[in-house]
Every structure is written in C-alpha cells, then in structure tokens.
Image (tube, rainbow, N blue to C red; front, side):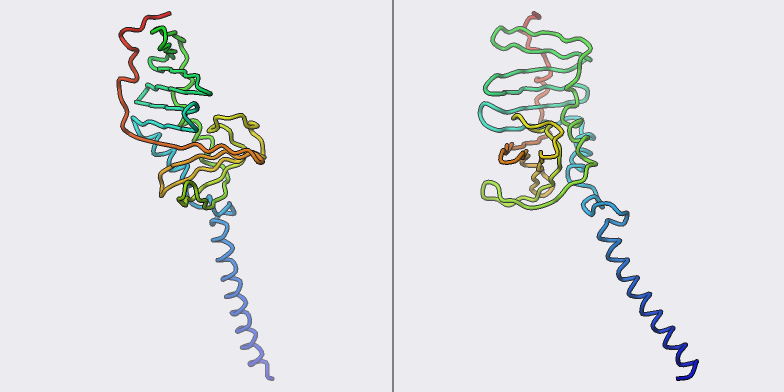
Length: 218
C-alpha cells in the first residue's frame, strides 16, 4: 500500500474516532446536566419553583394535616402572618405583625404580646429555602389510590410533626406533586413514616391577622 493510501486511511480513522468521541462527550455532558451536577438539578426542582412562587405571592396559606389532632395552618399577607397549630390535640394560635408576636388564648379570651419577635413570620418560605438547592432523587409512588411524582431530600425534619432525628442522614423527606401542585409531604426514618396532606391556597381571610375585639391583653 502506497503512502498516499495510508494517509487517506489514517485520516478516515481519525475522523471516525473524533465522531465517536463527540457522541460519547454529548451523552456524558447531558447526563450530568451540562455542568457535572446531578442531572436532577439541571433544571429547577419543583420545590424550588414552589419556593419562588410563594416568595413572590403577597398572600397565601399553607396547611399540613396528619390527623384531627395534629395539623398546622399558616397564613401570610405581606408583613403579617397567622399560625394555628395542634399537636396531640393541644392548639396554639399566633398572630405576627408590627414586629411582634401575639399568642391568643381562646378559652380566656386573652392574648400575650412578645415584643420584637417575629420568628415565624416567614416560616414556610424559610423552610423551603433550606431545601430548594439541595441534591434530590426523583420517583413515583401511589398514595391513596393515585400515582404521584416526588422529589426526595435527605436530612430534613423541618416539615415533620413527629419526632425524627434532626439533620440525620437516615431521615428522608419526600415532596409529592400533582403536576406542579404540592399535595403530600412524607418524612421517613427507617421503618417510621409520617404522611402529611398539604393544601396551599391564595384565598386568605384578612380577619385572621386582627386580634379579636373582645380579647384583652394578659
């Protein structure tokens, strides 16, 4: 074989190798999300999108329900918030506004003022903010005879009502979505599981942020 033919064959082989390398690089690049990250984070997670939506909303409510004796209702309107939580049947209500928190006692029609305290003003947004940029796994699961997609995060207990090991690598939290709508949150630690039903709404009663006129300060 003369040198000219050998040179042509060498060029063809080189071109074929470059094409193969290009195809391999393309698939590896796309599998890693284009930047070496987990492919799940190549685009915004649904938790991240929910965080952005609620952060932009001036008024919304966020409700978690385990059962009749364990549930939480949170409402926010601009710089005011209202929380109504029940743990094992014991109810606690707060209004947060004007930089203060007000504990309402329905049985005595009194309230306590905690000045310069608005810790729970942005509790839901703050909780989602801690989750939105974390690595996660995706999957699907049937709950109450319906199939949902979920995003699973490790080491979270912020959205649990029961006792789970805080910041443990053994704890996993799954956010279940119907489309882009968050419908359930499950916390898992070993054989222990807690499933909370979620309801988010923009219909908020503005009267929630007012201390009832027949309540007196304790």
